[in-house]
Image: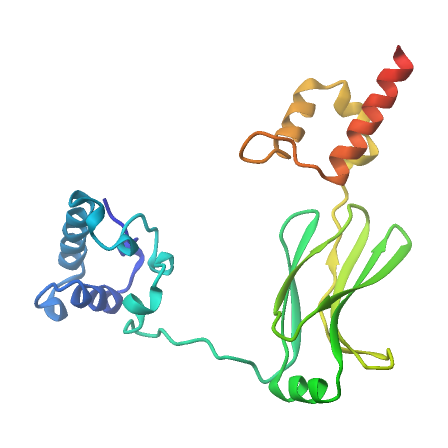
Length: 236
């Protein structure tokens, strides 16, 4: 059992790991020899039961170590992330059709200035959807650096800004993300087609269940079920 994906590592990384694993002469071994010896080493860990360090078991890569600093601090090119960044920025990444992941950095100078003046921080969310605009704020703290932002289905975009709010309520934009396009769901506008196509209905709702098999409560599911119940009542 190979616990680390050693085949994807460079020779220098392999040699560094081999040294940490106590393999003698690792600096002069070939790539193939190191991989073979690491496979044997990890096989020993797997056979010796649960008394060994659990950090070395059931891993798919170096970053899966629960105590990563203990094992990879000496690897070539590995550096600690800085405590802060010089620029104030915010970015968003789409998680799925309903959620964005927003992450930001507040520069030390901006942080000191704003806190000294008693300002609070908010995420200012703007959603343009089918010609309609919605704006709302999400309060965040100075220790926050990430947030999940919900967005509707439709035609338009969602943009998130990091803003400060003064004691008298004046809001100033510190950084703003690039707009992220909304997802237009065909089935929201055509739920009747899903109702009368069993294969499509089952496929779509299967994608909206959790790992226990329970239906996830989302606006899409609620709208479809509401329409179906309404039509069934009228049919009776």
